[in-house]
Image 1 (cartoon, helix red, strand yellow):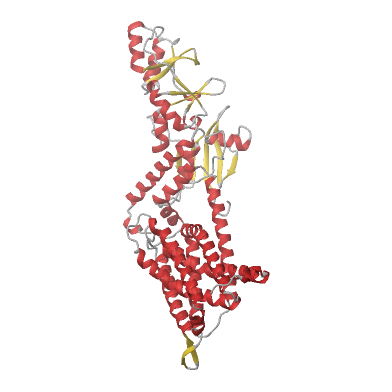
Image 2 (cartoon, rainbow, N blue to C red):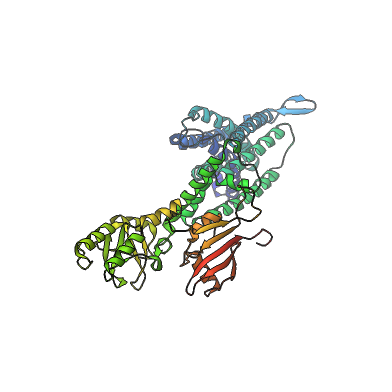
Length: 532
């Protein structure tokens, strides 16, 4: 019969609180095992499996507490082997410990072998009944341990039952967050399985009469949990740091790794790339082109018009004040299909016209004063990003967009070819030279040897240079320049003279040719490792 006379006894309340705390601590291992087993069933049944396991643990403990007289008999020796006596409790601990060792080992084996386990896409789940049966076996073992502890701590049955009910209630509230946390962090799952191995081993040796103080177990578990907390903090800070980088940059790195960038890095370090015997030189070349194109696409959104445009000094336009012969000569020398048409100065723009319409107007009227087939120019600030530029370019006359600076002056011109060159590389006209040319040393004998010196035009795009030299970090965050000349002017602080050098980002820039107002050519070379 249950008695409640202890309610007025402060000592009994202290015993209740101590026993409740101990029951929660002793039940953590049971809770961890239930969390791992519940992952095996279908997602919609996991909560029910978890609650069912805890309810069975509660019922088992209450039943064992009600049968204390029988429970005491479990500690009496039943058989002896070689001077060691075994009681019913010992047999339960040995069987439960072996079962726990088996389950923890099998779970560890699956996870270490990389077997897909418990994923949402998987259609193979353990049956609800099988998981519940396994939980029952472990509940019996863990319940026996906690009940024996309760019997040794307090004298009133109602205090024991109250402590068990409160402890199980707390565990039910904590079980779902704990399960979600454990399943979301693979390293925590591995740590919990190692805990179960240690607990299973302690149960087995306990059954053979070798008592292992719980303080040792809790100290080992506490130290491991502390290390795992440090690990989780480090991972969280790493993720936080990664999120500060542009998402396009992170996506580009991920895709490049998938495209074989890792294989290239292994080869550069003198290691044998995986499955290299199956990849011929053609495959390697294709992989390099694909990587460069993907990098160009993913970095496109980070570029401004300034890094894409043909600068004002290199633009070709038609002046209506020129003579017909001068206009025809200008059209014959250029291979463009559309031209900006201006009056006297590029900033006094009248519109955009086809080259064929301009020639037809000259043939009919001898001048462009009455040119009717003019379309309004499309203007865009040079700070606009390239993604918005594409939408604007689709509606522009001749797909030509004119970039304007903050003062309203035309600073450059962008065509679809400029955008396409960012992705697929340079498309040179008959009279054009590449912006980046590798300078091969005299002792250059092996085709696979990486060039170390390059002749680079001052107007060469820094993004293109990064791709060609396979380097990063040439364009600092927030930089208002996008060319090699802009980089040198920013770092040197003045217009350099011929032969002047700059060492930056493990590269040496040497000015080869400079005009009175701009840098024409630069020699870029990689520094040897001992000079970096």
